[in-house]
Length: 113
Length: 111
Image 1 (tube, rainbow over the protein chains, first blue to last red):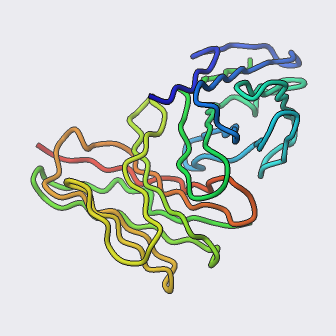
Image 2 (cartoon, chains in turn brown, orange):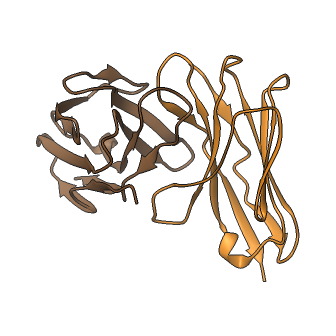
Image 3 (cartoon, rainbow over the protein chains, first blue to last red):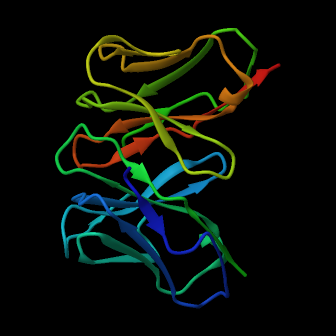
């Protein structure tokens, strides 16, 4: 079974803190993604990566950055957390090329206070 | 920005009935279409994928694709209370290897 593991299930952080969300996949997938999910807005793509050290902006990259130093690990960084970044964050991975499904981690519910 | 549209629901059907979930998309070049199911508090899990026009059946689930109309649907036959969840339509973005998701349709199956 494909496994995508996110480091935390729940996080509470203070405004202005630097926040790291970690994601690891064990299926040697080339592609990795970070989405956030908010009620009524569905899943929105923040950043994605096709390969180690490569990253591409998604639809809502402002306030976020990412790091992919190893193929299996993709980190999302909130440089200075704000209350409007309170959300469910979902990491996903997929094989390279097109026409492939994305496998999701269990999600991290982040609350910024 | 490419869009995927779904009726948010809730769609309420009695147990044993057919549930019909619909999705339209804006990217004419899209080739891959996916239906995910998401239970409350859980992450999305894949139910079906479809690449070609027509119908694709898997057990109680049938995905239907009409590329000319830019329309994808999911039929759930003999609906069960355990099918109560949010169903997300996802379309592969032709410009990048990422999925664009609709906001989901909440399905309620009444016992």
